[in-house]
Length: 377
Image 1 (cartoon, rainbow, N blue to C red):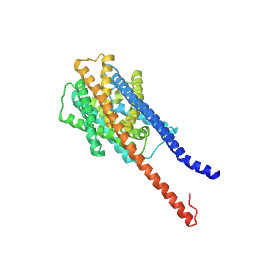
Image 2: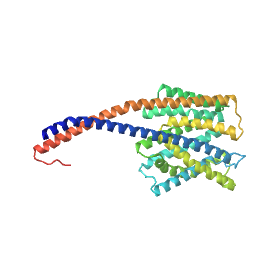
Image 3: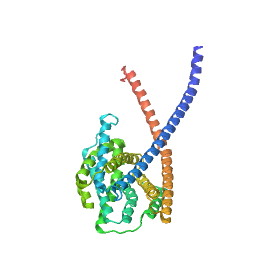
Image 4: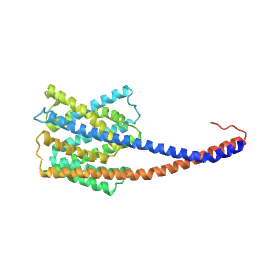
């Protein structure tokens, strides 16, 4: 009876093991689907936060800086205020234990801050020295520059569909934004510096997050104090060169103070979402998203501020939106292709490694028993 029971249990054990493996695979699949669903929700949240906060801060700054508003024309100093509030939020978050602080070499943070602040200053000088049309062209050229730099620095390749979609987006935004194009030697040099520094800054955000396994908010809380200190130091001098106006002589009204505070509050969400989007996606995707914001600003300007809307603007916006939809589709195809190829390789390697590890442990325990030794745990 006992021998029969043992033989039956031996016959059933492989079936039980098979059913157990199937159940385990099913649970893993369900867990993976849940993770993908939550990741998609997080992606939409990051995009939405960036679009809403960016469009909001542009509208707030337009009221704050325009001559019909509060005429606060100190753009570089205002950016210093933005990073000061962001640094304060980061310090409070670290002090309360809401976010953890990881170690990053100071020289890397300092170098990143120099690039980021040079980007801000060069953009402001480019806008002052060049026409609005050339300024828009310089912003549009950032997508191909980012693609080339990522290929040079990280060997990243782009599919034909992504290249086509990016081209459509750039052409569409160019049609609806570029009007007069005037450029001079100084303006061209400032635009070139702005393009290179902005592209390097956005690539560096993703690289630093991956290199040190640090979150977007944690990285921002480390770079914001350095950027705030340097911008508040040199910002007033840069603004004086740009506008010939002194920050100390500005008449701070209650309305202006409220809009500065609103701009700083929106900047916190804008900065966090920028680091978040680049960390989750790529610098190229963030540039495409930036042009989506341009389309939103044009539409809101037409709705809220009675800006002129021509057939040329409308056709350009439609073309840009089509390009963004195609870009999203192309990126999704790349993700699915990578998801099908990489996990299979990983699972095969991990299974082989586990089998070798199991055989090694069994062999070592047998050798210990043969030698009359107890295997160490």
